[in-house]
Amino acid sequence: MREHCYPTGRKPPVTTTLTAGDTAPAFTLQDANGDDVSLGDYRGRRVIVYFYPKAATPGCTTQACDFRDNLARFTADGFAVLGISPDAPTALARFTDKQELTFPLLSDQDHSVAEAYGAWGEKKNYGKTYEGLIRSTVVVDAQGVVELAQYNVRAKGHVAKLRRDLHLD
Image (tube, rainbow, N blue to C red):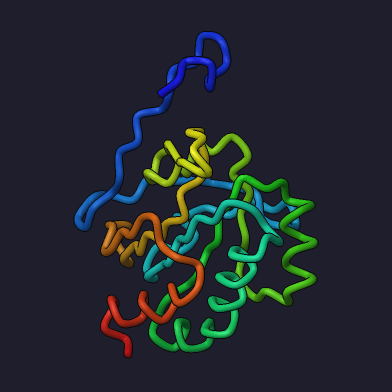
């Protein structure tokens, strides 16, 4: 990594991905309405926690709408869905309203939750290396244990693949 990519005194984060059997890191983040939402609020339910880079961008819109369109099926299968991005709650509110999203989007502006989940790290785009959000999905079981963790997922088709990987289809 190039040293000048990081603010003075800041070292690059060590990205550690989660695997099945790990305890899911606890978190509390603000949703699009500015209300606190915690992973612990979903204890006793399976939760799909997906990380996406930026609200209202083409790939993130495709992925969010795919989760929206499949939410009833996920709910029937016992899952809740939470989307997390570095966006501010106001941006999440606009995105939620415009796309008529029916599940919580959470604001992780300091990307501490993304780092804890291994969804923040080195990315390369057009020959440039930088730190950013890695599109990822972590499924947490009813006891708060990671059931499935997927990193560098594609926005398009991810929900269908996730359903297959969870043996729901």
